[in-house]
Image (cartoon, rainbow, N blue to C red):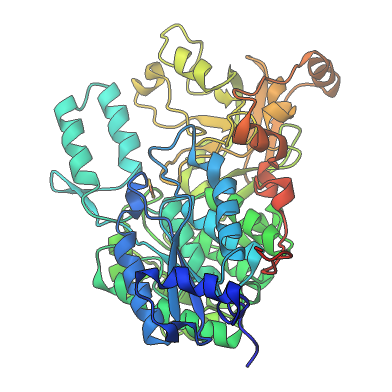
Length: 570
Ligand code: FES
């Protein structure tokens, strides 16, 4: 048997071996735990500031049971946790920072394998990115979605109904008392958002990539099977260490292709595009924005879940969960892609049952047809922009309209409710300076609320374009991730009120109807906006963040350094 990585710490019989072991023994660890058995890190994002992950102490205990049962030695450790709802200016600003915490915590410690506990949106990509750059045997365990929201006898979904209810409050159709009541009814158990928002999407990506066990995406957080899954992951990671099944053997190009097809089939969050690009670049898999367009073509949305549809993650679980969806993708899957349980993707899903065809439709009779994420190009977005057709209004997918420009999010908030704002439903709302550098952190503000004067007419959607992201629980004809962003000098920075903008999703075009010479003249007069903070992490972020089409990772984090530490600690 090859010498374990942890033996460089715990296997030493000298003063340093004494130091490494003795301090760990201070909580009652017996000597036999240092006999060369696999040391398993349980990487925990528990935090009361991340409400979606507050059950992770319990989840970690179940992983611990599994590791012990399989003969491993579990050591739990915390990493920076990113709570989507509380963290300002946006959790995405800190995704790369958290990934650095994860990477260095794994590499610097005596670990042979890692279990990643992930839940709220950014806790999934940050942990996988960090772990991918170390490349030990790694298994992902998602925290699971909350139970369905229930309000006045109806299902309500995280985020999705927040948007509609806040619009109803603004339009005077909902009282403040009802609004507060809905808050209590929407999030009534442990877990992450229970729509097919970013957290559920990323949990599905963990499963579709093969990094998690089958069933990872859908078991509710409070379902006992979630704890069983955690325990099985604890058992399995010990075997993975013995098999030297490192993360890069799972995160292959084929695995990403499966994930991208699954993303379309679940009508998943546009945020997954950025995260999958960033993860792929960590392991050296060549993945581009165009792969999303190419692989998504001809894939249908099979899952009728909010925000694209009607049901919630609890229903998805009872209908069969992601394995039932992957089975429907049979001819499109890379069937031989290896997964964490040692089986191929197809071995895992080929017999997966579906118990509710309203929630998970057959591929031959899909919920929505041809709904892969579309990648747009044109003089407004030479490096790309994306739109999620399944969340958009079909009539607006081909549209030409007059630009109404907001220079930044503060400008938008200041003017959107103004009855004198020169706007109607045929206009294109343009938001600048909300990209990676511009916000900073690429906030989820791309789905701008419509102006009240338009809402009052009963209009519910308009074309909106920006360099921002959109919450996975939001919907609308919203063009996102325009690259290069305005703050980096992209053409978006040069759009003026009254310019005509053309969107044609079927032709993959987003164009500003302004001559090249005029754009050149405007660029000559353009000055970059000053970053809001010019020290500390914000400065590091501003100086090193890549654009959306490159995954918005830091330039110096792309790739991996492996598990080797070039210096001892004495
Ligand atoms: Fe945590 Fe939605 S706020 S998953």
